[in-house]
Image 1 (cartoon, helix red, strand yellow):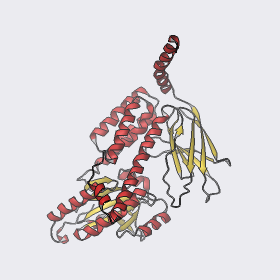
Image 2 (cartoon, rainbow, N blue to C red):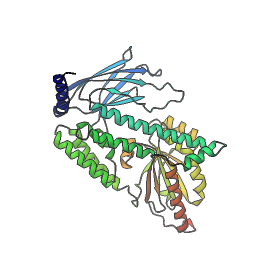
Image 3 (cartoon, helix red, strand yellow):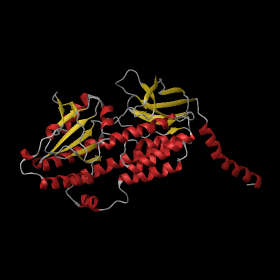
Image 4 (tube, rainbow, N blue to C red):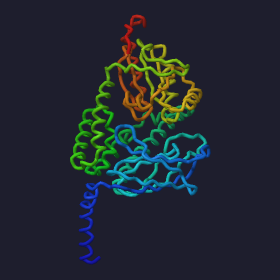
Length: 409
């Protein structure tokens, strides 16, 4: 390479960040979204795709919809004040998120053709800008973590059933190089550091919107303040700041030692039931849904726990966030859970009140109706903690349940 050419390439490379920063500071007013859907839903006459804008209030707003063409393609033309996060919902079976600072293209699978169908989208890579790749990588990180969780649940389930116990002993006693959640956090931290000065970072900060962890809260607020100052047009950062403040206030009501919120939901038998009847017992409240793989994987484990500790004053209540009652009832019949089943009559309100975005989420409540601990997912650590807490509580509890003061939640 000639010296002049080398110098030109180097100058271009050095200038690239300046150009990208200039693009970030200039709001993008319009883009085109093109996509394909590989498999359509044979049960639907019209194949629809919806486009939503994430305003970071916790409730994305549908801004457009279209019908998939005969050649399995769809197109959206977005008119906007500035770039932000959008979500494509294909047939209510598949999703993809992107950053709208340039035209994007995405090839989506669409309908689940597997024998056992679940409405859990697989990973979709969206072709777009440099900043859009942050969402691609964040989404992939979540997908890899989810798949690893499924694999670990499955391996443990079948290892327990094996006649040769070597496999299960290895899984139980061998320390992994990183626990699943630590793996996820390590990758997330690297991604955040790589895009820390870019407006698309707001996409990652959503995950800190429901935490009572002071360190995470202060970190998120600090990064949001930087984004608000650097990109005054990024109204999503301002909205997310308010959402974090609101959600943190609610999360602080759900800390250890706080009373479990008083709630009433429709039951599987048609009545409306609350949790106050379980006063005087340890109660595990399990938020789940029929379509949630990890939730269904956890049920046999909770059954074992229930069978072992029921006589020691331990109860379980499952609260589903299903919106399809038929799917909920079928899942209940399939799983045969021997404890009370309730159905949230407002999924969004329930998720906001109990501060969760993923399931299963479980709350362990003590005999006085106070929160002992919250669990996201159900693994060996969760089970061990619950057993230890019940064991200690049983030792300290009165011999007769009637002697426990009955107070409402």
